[in-house]
Length: 450
Ligand SMILES: Cc1cc2nc3c(=O)[nH]c(=O)nc-3n(C[C@H](O)[C@H](O)[C@H](O)COP(=O)(O)OP(=O)(O)OC[C@H]3O[C@@H](n4cnc5c(N)ncnc54)[C@H](O)[C@@H]3O)c2cc1C
Image 1 (tube, rainbow, N blue to C red):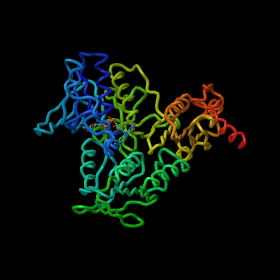
Image 2: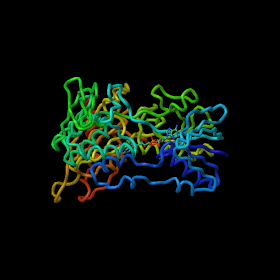
Image 3: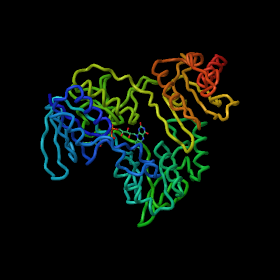
Image 4: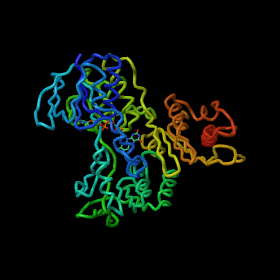
């Protein structure tokens, strides 16, 4: 069987490893536009602030590594797949170095073409001092430009914007942080936690401009100018990070896609064409809190879906269990961890929902130290199922977000969370674990509302 994989970052790399682990002699042709594979973009902010000195250390695989996985593996770097004919099981490829074009046929195809940064329809967004942040080249360009810079504008208050704002406040730059809506991280947190993050950034000198929409960019040799609906800002350069969109032009009209362009797949990562599988940022996830397709471009989804595509392309065996889009980030000396829906998103999805917020020390006050955790739990007021959670603390609460993620996956209720068995030892928590207490706060609120 001839298997072709188009796109080789996280989803593509995971799929290839899986196929060859199961069938080392499989014929696998991998096509990637770039000259590299498997770049961990999640380390870009750490590279920019200097914690990770070498960008090269953020690649976890190589073309040579993939080629060694089996005798019939062919890695075609700097090869652009330009057109697909799903009916005849073939596609057109251009060698980007020689310009040569050829046709490749396949028995099964895995589409892992990922996403690209949203380029807002703003005038001037493609000017030289207006940069994007997605791949290794972008990281190098930002790092280089920042060397001479004093003021850096970050446009877009999602997690990449917050990470970059923090990184550049740590390197002594003046950071102008512009976000079109009134809350940072609005896909991840509700107002109470959004405010805490904004305060933390401000405390570190980040100049936040919320509810301010960038309308036009301009630049000259040394500056970027950002005109917003409120004023005009001047910076040495600007990074625009307002989200991602699926890169699926290749499959348009050939397989079923959602209105946002993301590919619709079944539980086996199979598209509407049974011989085409897809995974990663190109694909819509099954979002368990709503039970619907959603666009959630995360590396965690990409590696899971990529591995499943690699398994199922050899015969549908293992189902994808969907996602809660669980994620975490550092905000200076705090950790933010989130899973599932915010209250705003739950209400927008027309779910009967409420949220409770609780602040609680993670372990007893008699211990030499403790730290408060601000927690928010979103739940369905009809069936009391947990829909989402946000945790923010100096204490490492990431595994708590993972636990809540599993509870959402398993359709657990606030009552389950209130009384589920959790350990107690004063080093680690109180007789009631803080998550039990969060569940109990939700139960009390829900009971009062009845
Ligand atoms: C700054 C930053 C920080 C991030 N931090 C996190 C994090 O902390 N946690 C997390 O879970 N996620 C994070 N992400 C998201 C994560 O990086 C993406 O979800 C992940 O890269 C998706 O992997 P993918 O393989 O689906 O797609 P992509 O990484 O988009 O790769 C797709 C590949 O396909 C290639 N390609 C596309 N079309 C063609 C074609 N026609 N022919 C040939 N090749 C093609 C592209 O060149 C590309 O290499 C971050 C992203 C960024 C940018």
